[in-house]
Amino acid sequence: MKKYINKFFLLGSIIIFGASCENDAILTSLKAVDFSTEIEASAKTLVLTEINANQNMELISWPAVVFPIKAPVTYTIQFDLIGNTSGGTAWINSKRIEVGEDALSKSFLGKDLNKIAIDLGLKPNVVGILAVRVEATLDRKIYSNSITLTITPYEKSVVFGAIYMPGSYQGWGIDTAAELSAIESGVYLGYVTIPTGSGLGFKLNTARNWDQFYGADKDGNLKSMSDTDLVMPGVGTYQIKANLNTFKWNAVPYSWGVVGDATSGSWDNSTPMTFDHVLKLWKITIVLKSGNVKFRLNNNWTINYGPKNAGSGIVNLDDPAAHYIGEAGTYDITLKINDIDTSNGYPKTATYTVTKK
Figure (cartoon, rainbow, N blue to C red):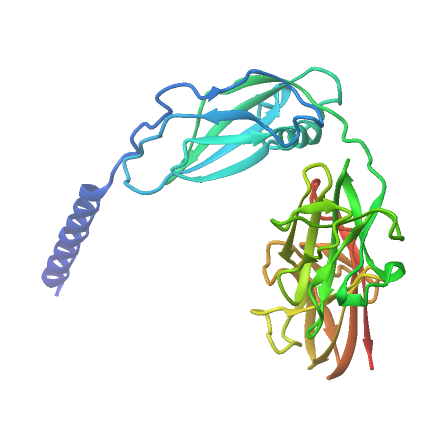
């Protein structure tokens, strides 16, 4: 018996050894990978102002990083203060701008660079320095050497004022016309819902009277005191932007909606809300079953809100929580959000109501 045990032991050892040798044969070591040359900036010194806010002010470019694996490489640009680029927490609080797969450059508008600089702590109208590097990611992360940019940011001026949008959608009453708020000098932004069966014509008035208004020219652009109506694309809810400096305007489909397993669309499809331009809030009357609801923008999870605390009436940006509907029935839901100017991101909180009819 002992002889057979020894034979089995020997055979097992051979199998294990053979398996070990086979595994050793397929082991590989990571090849050294790096940026072949330095990254480049089209301008090393930048003075940012509201005048050049919408101009391309910077182009960052870099060489392709060649990994041993043939697959798309994702590139990300990092900005940070020089003092935060060394030590154990180096670059941990950097501003990261993901450029995409196999892209080898990224341009920046003045206002985008200004936001990065201010967010990182540079003072308006004071010369500051930022470090910039590029991250390449495939089976690991590779970083370029950093370069520095000398940047003077600006403080965005607060703009007040509004224009008004009388039209067929609300019977042309100037006193109840939707308001477009100023977001820059001469640039206005607002929201409107065009109901089914409504006409599509409208004007833009500088006050709640007819002393000064804009209609359409032959190309549909803005023209002062034109009797020709501007025309919406169709029924639905839109974000409207009008630029009285360039006489251009546009209307983009835009809607907050409710989503969740209490709705007919569950977690996959939002039920769109409509914008009440008089009360300046989003609202919906909807049949719900027992379950959860929260809010998201344009039927997408990129911008969404949920309540941290049930019953608080406050929802928080990108919060995983939802409002629980305990009893099936018909509900009135409202959302009030100060998102008229999102150049600094959507607000951290908004208010809402859920009322059973």
